[in-house]
Amino acid sequence: MLINSNFQPKREKNDRLPPGQYETRDFPVLSLGPTPDVKKESWNLRVFGLVESEKTWNWEDFNKLPKIDWQKDIHCVTKWSKFDTRWSGVMLDEIMNPPAGGVKVSDTATHLIAYSHDGYTTNLPIEDIRDGKAMIAVSYDGAEIEAEHGGPVRLLVPHLYFWKSAKWLKALEFVTGDKPGFWETRGYHNYGDPWQEERYSFD
Ligand SMILES: Nc1nc2c(c(=O)[nH]1)N[C@H]1C(S)=C(S)[C@@H](COP(=O)(O)O)O[C@H]1N2
Ligand SMILES: [Mo]
Image (cartoon, rainbow, N blue to C red; front, top):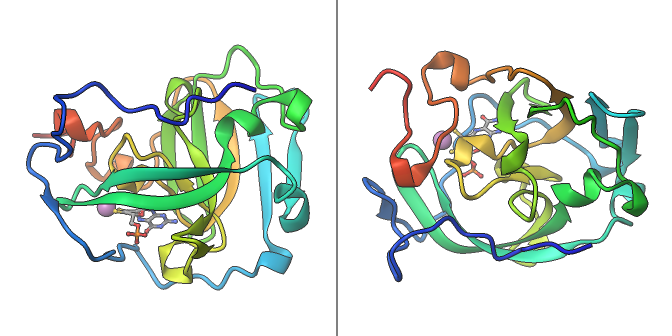
């Protein structure tokens, strides 16, 4: 299928730093708790909710789905941005594409909820995970994703603040009518566009 992997929000040419951000070369770790020990061998991805029939992939089956390489800038609400991070993984488009082995999502679904092994959740409008905008990443910088950065599998939605990129991904739920996640119910913005500085709900 056709995937626009070069999706970037509109912005001034050469201006890669969203307002209020600074560039870092490090890769800071931001987790709300201890790093869960998620083994590839027992890892599953369950996709459920408003789908024709729910589906669970194990590591082996998941890795048979088509993967692409992605080079993206990431922006954390705590104000660091990191340019040109290199990932590879399966686009959400494949997960939602029955001919590729994905699920058939109901037309009534408006949002995706991501669930993680540490109890974290985050919500995303469906348009923001379609058409080459979101990846389920299995590798970072040419190697397996380190545990503290969400390995073995994390979500990646780089056009929104990085808290939307759920680490230690275990399930995806399609819903209608939204369902704010961990940070979204604790004062973070419900959408989180770095170019609009959508950091908090009560600014
Ligand atoms: N499961 C899970 N995902 C998460 C988090 C978390 O605590 N748990 N933190 C979020 C936040 S606030 C940020 S900024 C990024 C940090 O990712 P990193 O630690 O790889 O830099 O992960 C996001 N995804
Ligand atoms: Mo964050």
